[in-house]
Amino acid sequence: MVAFTLASASALVRSHPLGRGLSVLGKVMKLGYEPDVVIYTTLANGFCIQGKLCEALSLVYQMVKEGYKPDVITFTTLVKGLCLEGRAFEAVSLVDQMLKMDCQPDIVTYGIVVNGICKSGDCVSALNLLMKMEESGIEADVIIYSMIIDCLCKVGHIDNALNLLGKMDNDGMVPDVVTYTSLLNGLCSFGRWNDVARLLREMVKRKITLDVVTFSGLIDALLKEGKFQEAKELYEDMIERGLVPDTITYTSLINGLCLQNRLDEAKQMFDFMISKGWFPDAVTFSSLINGYCKSNRVDDGMNLFYEMSQRGLVANSITYTILIQGLYQVDNLDAAQKLFLEMQYKGHHPNVVTYTIMLDGLCKNGKLDQALELYSKLEKSRIDLNIFVHTVMIHGLCRAGKVDEALQLFNRLLEKGVKPDVKTYTIMISGLCGKGLLYEVETLIRKMEEDGCCPNDHTYNALIRGRLKNGSTSIVVELIREMRSNGFSVDASTRGMIIDMVSDGRLGKRFMDLLS
Image (cartoon, rainbow, N blue to C red; front, top):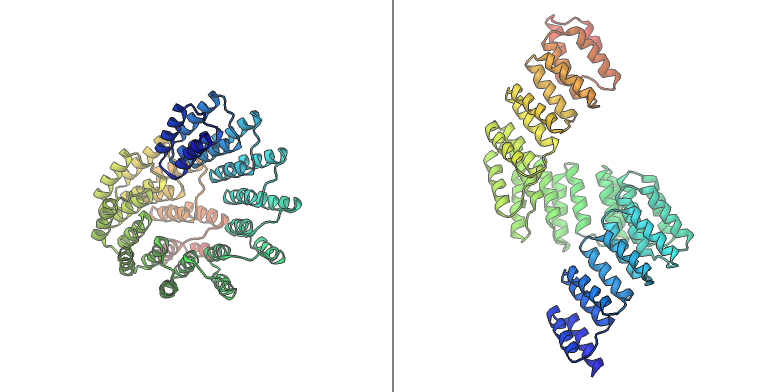
């Protein structure tokens, strides 16, 4: 009778709502039977599955209070619950507590907590856990090693990841395709193609077959580096091996073709993937829409947007933002604003990128008052505005001839502790030069130097044109020489200005020598 009742409680917790499990447990206790560690652990697991971690922890605390000793399964249940809620560091503390209570974590426990720590990007803690495992005589498996290697690669510690691969070899642990895929993706991200080739040879030597995920990662990396031919050859190699490209593979190829402005081929690839039974997802659609918009084929982009809806796919904020930018580029202000409103109506919250595009579009289309109104609302909101947003407004004010207002906004940024970048400084310098406010220009250049912000070619060209307009020819000579010593050269606009001024006698012919 006792065994049957306790088993019933356990089964109910696993297969029915948690409340019924607790109800049976209550009945069991009323009948005078004692629950055991298994029952408490099963109930705690039920709480964790339902996201009620506090109740799970309270139950285990009650269990200890009743004189029961949690076992490794109990602790592992709580560790998993903490990790599921993103509380990996508390899970690490719980593992330390296990050791103090003479309860040895097993490889399952360590695997769960290492996974949680790696997802948070804390490679140091993950490596410390690996060390603790070794000290406890528990041998990490290839899954744990792969998780840590993946974490190291994602935070840019590629050499440490390669060292850990070497440690696996020394310990007689054979890496699998997942391990190598993480390393290959990391190496590709940093353009270490020689190491990529070496690892691929190593995989062949070890008879580790590349899978679709590995191929897709490599193809994507090559395309982002502009190595389209190499990516195409890898795609063909993939087909020859009998591997079937998936949505991720096709999306990478479509994006790569769009980057090369080969939009018709990208659309052919899009149609081809559908013919092969792979349906484009929101990322695929957004990649092709982005390609169309960058080439000012916004109507084609909008048609794809409507097709998304017809296929039951929900456009995300990225898709909306791409289209809004495209519509502004082709001066379709009304459609851009309509889509912006639709985006919010559909429950997609505009992010700082969307707002930057909106402000830029309004400014460039002569709607400065609307831009200032939106900017004012954003300043009062909780959105963390970056320097790009402020720079767009400074540029908009300068373009409209409101340089004094632009300078006021620029100075307010300094008061708020927002650090302008070289683009912000250059726009402000250009605006001041256009108004002949050379004293303010000098003040701004000194501030730029104090901030450790180095001028770029745009800054120099803006200064040179400003000085030429105001007849400061001796300073122009110094600026051009300084500019060339820093590896920059005059742009087409500055060159044209100098040639015109030499032609009509406002500048001496020696200035032509400076252009050579």
